[in-house]
Length: 362
Image 1 (spheres, rainbow, N blue to C red):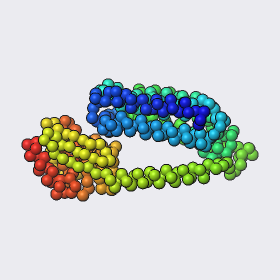
Image 2: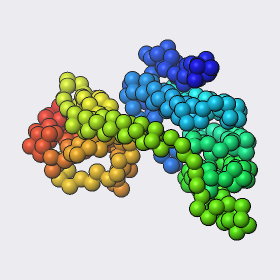
Image 3: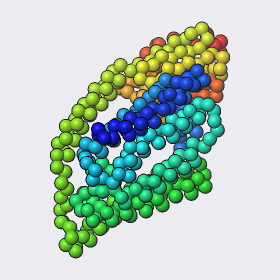
Image 4: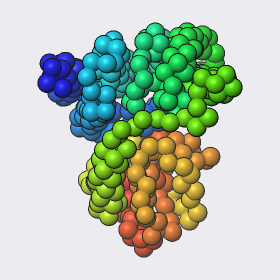
């Protein structure tokens, strides 16, 4: 790692460049920014400005460091192909520029088709990776890592030569998917990715069977993990424990509070985004006894609280701040979009509804 500190620092700076961009144009950015898109290419998930500017690059930075740490920790030395190592260092920085670039483009209302843009990006990414796969030597962190390839160098090499060709073809197929109807693009992209993984894996197994038949491989493949399982086991337990503690803490502490101001509804939330809706854009308000919250598309779902972007058959995508202690839900249509909210319980929801009706005069 000492010899690669410069590359690590530069690649980390590239990952964080979107934060600098966000700070420079902070006052021009909207309070809520689209960060998730549905299969049809329409935006169906958003984050508050601070979360969008800071959280996304920082999450990618953490993933980058974990990947580099794993690659250096478990594949030390210069045995691996240098081009493969460079790919490891620069893949996430490129992803950061692409994903955050799409978020900022949407924030500045730049017209683009996210589905086709994603196909172009994924196509280029798979073509590049496909060119490098045949050069990838046996390791525990990248490539087609099944026991037949890890136990036999010949199997690893032939499998990755095939995988390289398939990934290049798969990347080219991504470009052809752009000719399909937009709703089919995502499905075909997933199907291509699945085939790119399954075909080399099955080929590796069949090649292993052939090797066994010819006496060139053991019937029971033996992989020399060395100290890898012990090291990874201890680290994994620590990481899982931290994740569990954080998750439990978020679940226990998450909450939201709905207040009716002079000009708008103000929702302050811990665990998801705050929200403000001006009374002037409210088109209708209903108090529902039976409301199907549907499925969560993006957001928070805890023991009794649900916050974020949800979807049901009646409304399609809508925003929800829901406490299941309430048997009633206030459904608000504002500026062509739907918002469903509750109080702490049924009684609080009814009082909130009456107060909201008085505020908006509807």
